[in-house]
Length: 115
Length: 111
Image (cartoon, rainbow over all chains, first blue to last red; front, side, top):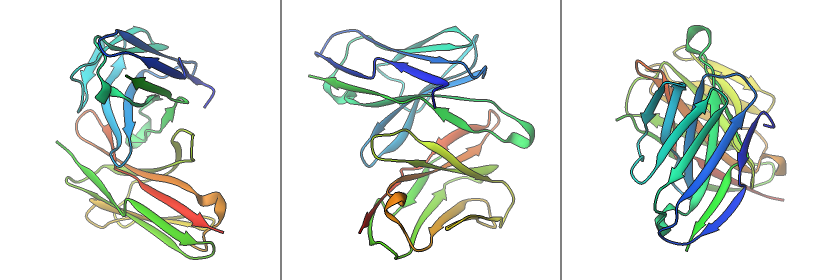
């Protein structure tokens, strides 16, 4: 969805390096998410933010940190990258509507390789 | 925490055959959503089911939500090569209504 953009789209880095993945959205949604996708494991939630002042850990937050700079921006950092963080990373946004109806809109993904 | 499992993990079918993927949650869900991810793409929302026992159809796709709101299924009739991709269910529950994605079923359609 062009309303959710991620940079970079691909990144190769070395073990121990600090990496930042950025996500921007023009949908005006309060909720933003970071997921990683690994074969056979589906989408696993790293961090999520329901508004600028609200940031929560997901199921696999160890080794990651996030920053919600504005409603439209949510960045994910790997302070010291390790090879098992090699994965496809997705940012997503959503808005909780009536009766708990919520649809997630995903960015195109960032493919990260840690050597 | 909440877990959402899908079976099978992979499925190869001949074009024209039917396909079904099943989704099971460890907890009762408020609603369930289905997403499709084409190869090389990102997940895209297909549908949401809210009511116990609900059945919805989209052309050749039939979605069901279990009576206990802990399981769901997606059935594709007469698969086509355009159906190739990974199908995810996603369950919504809890006070913050956080979405938990299933492990996904990767569908390959052989022409």
